[in-house]
Amino acid sequence: MDQLRQSLLEAPIIEKGDYEYFVHPISDGVPMLKPELLREIVIKIIRKVDLEDVDKIVTPAAMGIHISTAVSLMTDIPLVVIRKRQYGLAGEVELSQETGYSESEMFINDVTEGDRVLVLDDVLSTGGTMCAVLDALEGIGADVVDTVAVIKKAGPNKLDDTDHHVKTLINVRVEDGEVVIVDDEGDD
Image (cartoon, rainbow, N blue to C red; front, side, top):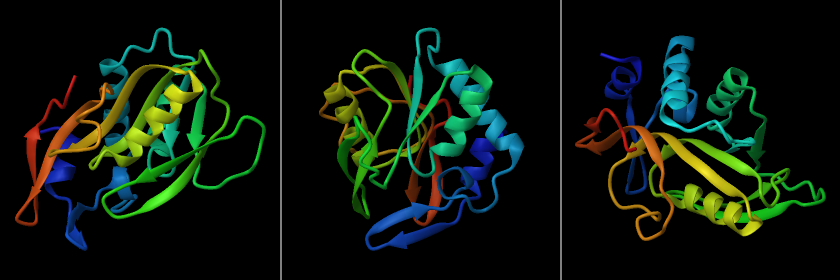
């Protein structure tokens, strides 16, 4: 059994209001992230995406950073982090994100029209963050070559009625307080 699959089956579940949330090293930093799990995920991402024409990797803060940093180190592709803090630097683009349990503003720098980007994130759940990121990149005029979320929480999300496509490494749902694997190959 692969490490990502096993780690998800062992993930604790907490409730945030009506939202069942799994706690996982990739999405939450607890329990601790073991190098072998991160390595497995990076290798799966590199095998799943087309990196040939990618100029930049783009990831939202915070939990996409460790995954994207590891992919950047393995591929020599520069990394852009979409931050939750505004710096007011030239070319900064603001976007609004809404998840199943929060709303906030985020800020992009260093992506310009014509950049060919790979978007990476930890989890696709409600689709609020990913939809906001992809819409903002489209508004900038960047070419989104590929988009990957490590884990997809199965069910409807904000990307369902859009032209955006997100590849995933594994798809799960939370049922009766447990993680259930829906598709251990994810979406292509």
